Image 1 (cartoon, rainbow, N blue to C red):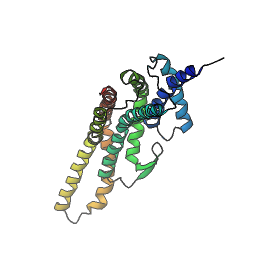
Image 2: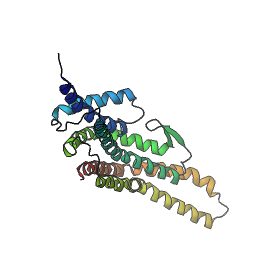
Image 3: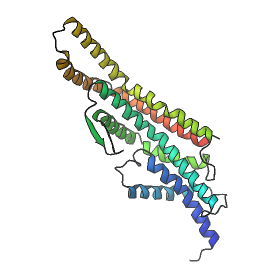
Length: 259
């Protein structure tokens, strides 16, 4: 088998630059980009996706040398696109974690911390519960398949070139990042409002009967009612999480289509 230099360069450009975007995307996006997935496994997933996606893509029209300075700029642009797309989807899990943190602080369980193996940080137990539930729902809704489909479509809307994410696309990402707090509030609002009413009731009891040790009685009761309110608010979690996912996927589409 004899290959000319031009054929080798074309083969390299056909797979190297799409691989750069796909590898950056899988390194950040939920499920694939978590620390529980080994780096070798993420690399294998990126290579597999590249081998599947590249044959359906149009041939690159650029004749840039992949080993030259312009080729490095194209590689950097593809890495940037993948990171931005993956980060937009990862913000959904950050909103879930923030919502669990708000609930934990309100019910007095903020001191109960545990290590999050997915991100390598310490989070409240309530946040870890919501993260695990969101991950299971994400897989049940085939969110990982939707991510792969969006990744493949991004090569049509934003072909391989030196042009990365535009300024308008970055502003779309910044606007979407504000939804971390909005999504967290929407998820935690039912339990937080119920616990606030409980705390108001304890305040009235303390004013009516100062001899009553509200702290000794209220703390275990607040914990118990917090779990009850969490259980009662679970039916609201699915539509809120689904709305966040749809918003994330729409944001990714707007980022790659912005000019």
